[in-house]
Image: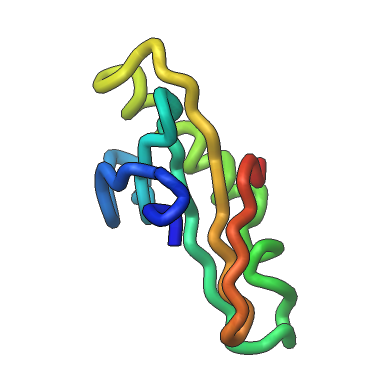
Length: 95
């Protein structure tokens, strides 16, 4: 999905101290951290809503650590791919 819009995949399931990045892309010169969330039903809210404050804080922290090492001058963006049932939505700049 994201490769079709010009993003270059750098890593999948990147395990780092303190957490994991589901997908890491390069969009031009911007590192894009992508969280993928799936919900089969809306009984407990949407997939996007499931990326809560704690998860966002963890992703920000580990992405900053990673970027400091591999690309200290790079801009970092956080996207979410939300899968609700069989509907997939890409939320650019989700947080």
